[in-house]
Length: 220
Image (tube, rainbow, N blue to C red; front, side, top):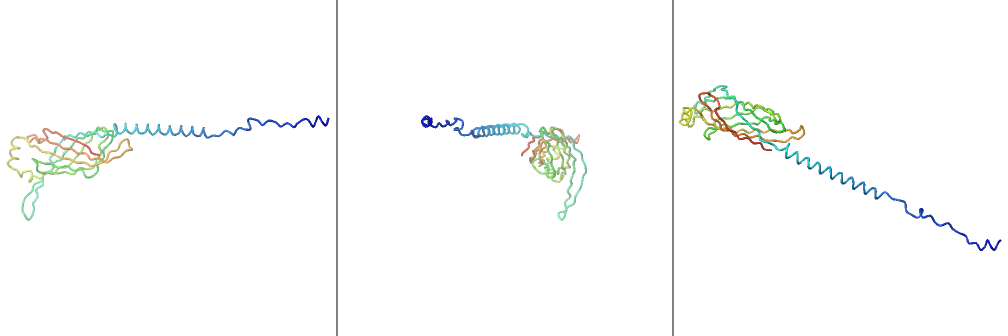
């Protein structure tokens, strides 16, 4: 028995194949998640860029407003005596109402600073300050202003003025500048300046504007 027991060699259990493999790591899964997050972020940024481009080309693109002088009314005549030259100056005040159509999807609010210059045959003969107001988006509004005409300047070329009055019409030009701001979608606010250059013919018999032609533009 002893010899048979001595002839038997001790056996060792073979190591398990599962115990020899390293434990699985989470690195590949983490890389996949990072790639997915990066692709989603790029897609969102691309969609945002396209949306902003479309918004800029459509909504944020400012279209020029249109203006039209709808009424003119004589408010008063004020003579003025100046010293020491002892000259008499005559100022005539006209109340003007200008209709403005705003085609933009943004309201236009203007504070103080709007101004109108009136010229007759190249000579500056009057001006007006424009009161604050708001023109609604895609809507119409009215701008009212008191225009002071300096009659002495208007009559500087008296012979030509008399000839125009006798012909029944007086041609003049008005240049208007209104600084303000536009508000788009209640979020975007941008400074803007509205310009209007008008040529009109004032009828002497009817004491009203007979015809007019305006060129309007807006600068941001």
